[in-house]
Amino acid sequence: MAELRGALIGCGFFAVNQMHAWRDIDSASIVAICDRDPERLKVLGDQFGIERRYTDAAALFAGESLDFVDIATTAPSHRSLVEMAAQNRVPAICQKPFAPTLADAKAMVKACSDAGVALMVHENFRWQSPIQAVRAVLDSGDIGTPFFGRISFRSAYDVFSGQPYLATGKRFIIEDLGIHSLDIARFLLGDVSTITTRTARINPNIAGEDVATMLMDHKSGATSVVDCSYATKLAAEPFPQTLVEIDGSDGTIRLEQDYRLTVTGRNGTAVSDVSPPLLPWASRPWHNIQESVVAIQKHWVACLASKTEPATSGADNLKTLALVEAAYAGAASGEPVQLDALLR
Image (cartoon, rainbow, N blue to C red; front, side, top):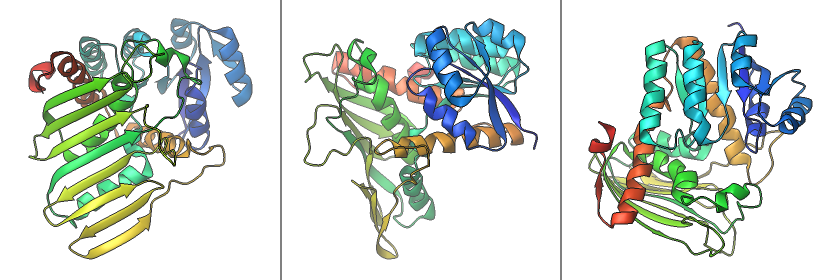
């Protein structure tokens, strides 16, 4: 397969991981970068040896022949950039959260569908190797039919030092982190019919919620609890690990701290270490997220080659984004929220 030519739009905090990951993929490369901030453009361009640099996205599309674009900006700019990619018939990866509103997200999906170009959301948590290991156990049938799950991310890690804007928004943990946990719940247990949410703000120095607990009814018949906290001090800091419990008709799965996976099922009990590999450019404790960036970008390249829809396509991610919107609506009202109405 000929090497795909890509461009990265947005040279901020997380884009460095995407650039390292593209270097690890033989069949694709980033040939140009774009950012409105000349200093960020220079830093990333110099670090990765990218000479073709733009401060304007329209100029990028006009000046380059691209097979895809990787949009790593913040959510308010996503719609205009995705629609620009669609107008130029360039497949697009879009960073999460996909859009500030569900209406924007639906418009982005429609624009790419009408243009006949692929659209994938960079929803990488489900691509972490420990989460993939849980999915593999479910697919094996060893624990039978799942009826309960818990997806848990509880930490006191200071995420604000690296991303200070997170402390200023009225929405925080559900939109920034819970979106990943909700997507994992969908990935493992299927789509959701109803969600009930409770939130709290424990840290007085931030504007948004830093604790969220969500109870979900899945269309499969399973029930799950998704709980997220950046206010939980533990003896051993688990950041950035997602812990998973699944109960099935014939057994259980437990993904515990330090990537210990215990499966009790039809074949007895097995304990394994599903630690993600430490890539040469990665650093602990971020290595599980960094590894998942390579995995999702490889998936994107494979989907472009085979002309198949990505697992985290724009259309699929509408369901995860709808869960985020429903969670905030339910937290405000105190009532359960039905999902189907949001997706019409």
